[in-house]
Image (cartoon, rainbow, N blue to C red; front, side, top):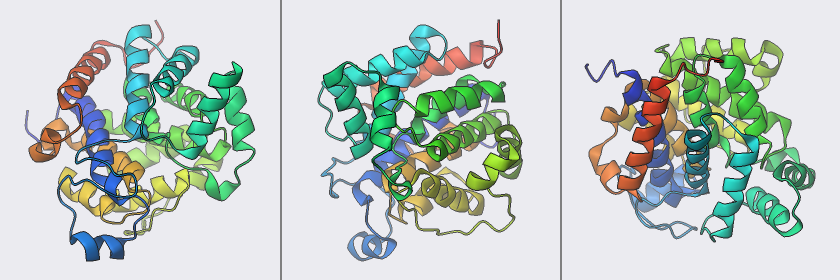
Length: 314
């Protein structure tokens, strides 16, 4: 099997390890502009630490940590369970993680202190945030769902919308998560980049897709990633369509700054699903936080996906 045609298991590993690598590569540059990055660091091409979070080289953020919680839930349950995922997110938060975004923190803290459900609290918290502050920190959790249900687009959409509401109740953010899940599923099914976009638009529904995946042959490259989930996805797709190869795609995205940890993770997931884990630079993987543990978890999940019916009903 050549690097250009990775098998299904390699694409699953690539999507998940790529998400973690891209997130860690981008974490030090969150909220920096492309010009600030260029002045201070030149061209980012390796794992470094620092930034406003004070991350260590290779350290990933909450986006990946919660994705790992969902992976564990899916492997234990053998299916998507909103209740089980919610319980694991609350246990993770109780462990005192270093990095938690504002919306996620308010939702998890409210549910932990009151005993209410995450969906109840995400609705309350989301109502206090206007549209321009609906962040994309939960988007990477759509990746495992797109992988597990890659042959069932209806299940991808249903599970992504349900899962997103656990911390981000905004309807548009849920649609962005579903779009990402559909893109990952399409790439796992060996569709090319443009075909994957068309598949996602069709499965999401044209009226909804037009707000998050406008059909165009001229996606702008170097679109600065704003704070919203939709900004993160659209910025990532601009670079995704304009680059070739895992390294080129992730470097292009991270060097734009903005929501660099989330967008780096999104790009890593898409590029990994397209090119496979074998395309991820070894020097990036070697510096990734908890690499042996992540590789073991990802390998088990890859076996689950490869041995399943891709989300078909029994």
